[in-house]
Image 1: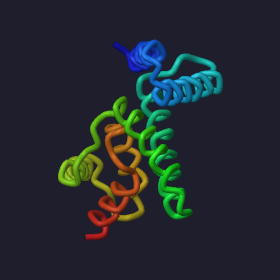
Image 2 (image 1 turned 180 degrees about the vertical axis):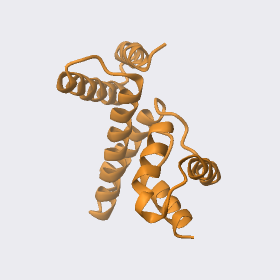
Image 3 (image 1 turned 90 degrees about the vertical axis):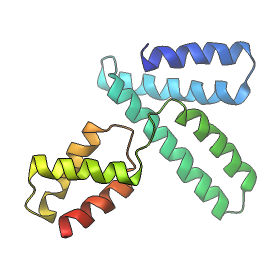
Image 4 (image 1 turned 90 degrees about the horizontal axis):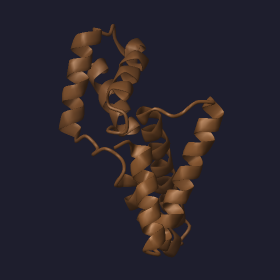
Length: 148
């Protein structure tokens, strides 16, 4: 079953069960997906759907952090609840060890000439593992490997 179909099915179930938070989150996701589809003027691929979901999840993480810094714990908790719903549709994040193995494999395959090829390595890994890696953490690990 495609991710879009699963989102639609879960949206209808949440609507019938009167799960307000889940309905709101899934409605927001459906809108974001529709906007992206209109922008591209074609149906979205599974990878593009994952990118939209990842972007929405990242926004919730950032918002929760900002609310905490502003002393608004109630709003931070709401953002985290929304984030948990979004995470249920994303692939499992890779551990640091798994990322290091993936980086090693990418380095063997791409044979980069140093830090100047970091972008090529990052691009390769982000495409190969969509939604499974944290870009910031991956960037740090790739930089460490290329520097040594």
